[in-house]
Each structure stands twice: as structure tokens, then as C-alpha cells.
Image (cartoon, rainbow, N blue to C red; front, side, top):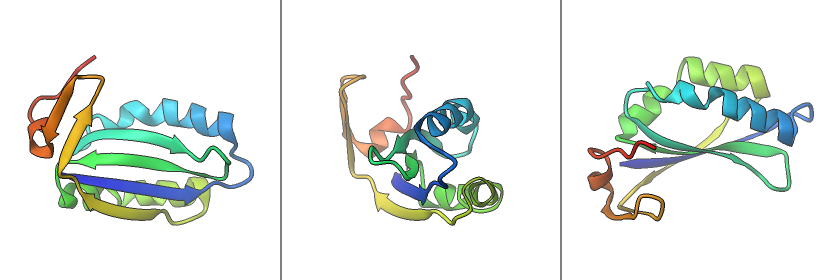
Length: 113
């Protein structure tokens, strides 16, 4: 399992409210992406930087997603290339579901609210 941290600088025309509204609007679009498990849409409290913390089934799934149309969209909307860092995810602790354990235990039993 892979955690990817994606960050990009926002143009001055996109502030807190604009960023928040856009993230809420596009959140459902991720649900059908192959290998996608979870995304936390993030905004720097000091402003100017946004992005996401993603959880993927594999590095291949993540890299496939971050190329092509997604990358083109980031460049068009924000005018920059994102900074993407990949991490192997060993374990997960999730207070909302009350589950904790090896990351692979979280790929087969998805919690639906």
C-alpha cells in the first residue's frame, strides 16, 4: 500500500473558500479511480499551498493516476507541476472505524458511511 503526499502552490486568485469549494466539488470523482482507496484534501493553514494525502493499493496505481489527464488538470488550474512524494504504508490506525493493523488488512474491507 502506498501513501502519496501531493502538494502544489496556489495562484493568488485561489484562496481558502475557492479551494475548499473546488475540493468538495471534485471529491466524488476519485471514487472510481483504479487502485484508489482514500484522499484527504489538504490546505496549508498559512495559505498558498494545497494538495492531498492519498492512499493507493500500489505504486503503479498512483503513478498511473498522476500522469496524463490529472497532471494536465493541475497544470491548467494552478499553473505549476505538483510535488509528489511516495511512501510505503506499513500500518494504519483509524479511530473512526475503530480499526488498526497492517495496511494490507485495509484493502479488502472498505468502510462505507
